[in-house]
Amino acid sequence: QVHLVESGGGLVQAGGSLRLSCAVSGRTFSTYAMGWFRQAPGKEREFVVATCRSGSILYEDSVKGRITISRDNAKNTVYLQMNSLKPEDTAVYYCAAKPTTYDNIYTTPTEYDYWGQGTQVTVSS
Image (cartoon, rainbow, N blue to C red; front, side, top):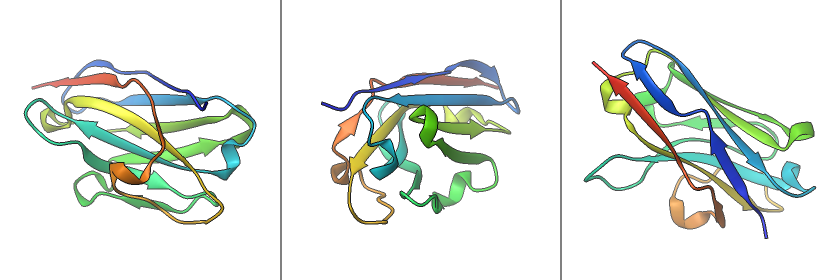
């Protein structure tokens, strides 16, 4: 079983920054496509950003330029650097993994096999 643990969430004022981490168990992290999703109260879970095995990145349009994903295969960890945060970024952020032999990027929750417990990000105005 693959386990994912998010950390780094918290309370930040608008315009501030946070870096979320997602630690992934196992030795085959480099074969995983990874994604970040978020879910705000009363809303559906939405795509934020994802990366394929080789490191290419796809961002949701509203976060492009403010949010960056990176991965460290040696540490089995993926990061979400968030800058210029806005109140509308407030949500529970989830890390997701999809073991795959394809170098594809996945943007829908149903495509992913493993999920973390989520970490709360609250941006105050």
